[in-house]
Image (cartoon, rainbow, N blue to C red; front, side, top):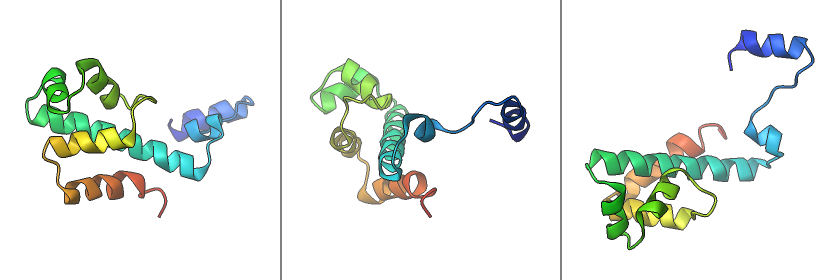
Amino acid sequence: MNKAKRAKLQQYGWKTGDAADFLNLSPEETHYLELKVALAQYLQKKRTHKHLTQASLAKMVHSSQSRVAKMEQSDATVSVDLLVRSLFALGTSRTELARVFSQNQFKKAA
């Protein structure tokens, strides 16, 4: 949200914040969710870059197309473990994975 819009809302008595404020998340929970979303986005990017369908990735990780769709949407039922294993199945290196962690997860923490 831009600063002008935020200031106008606050002028009329509205409170502004982010999802963490709204959900009353701890910093640890916020970092965990940010990491999970970053992994999900990277999974989708990596899959499309390799010109794979969700169904073909599902076969690679012995899952279903609908599960891959949930992984790419960072669904609450999807574990970080499954996201990481799927990225490894796509040929993601440890260095690439570390980059996803450092660029997306800890940028705000520093």
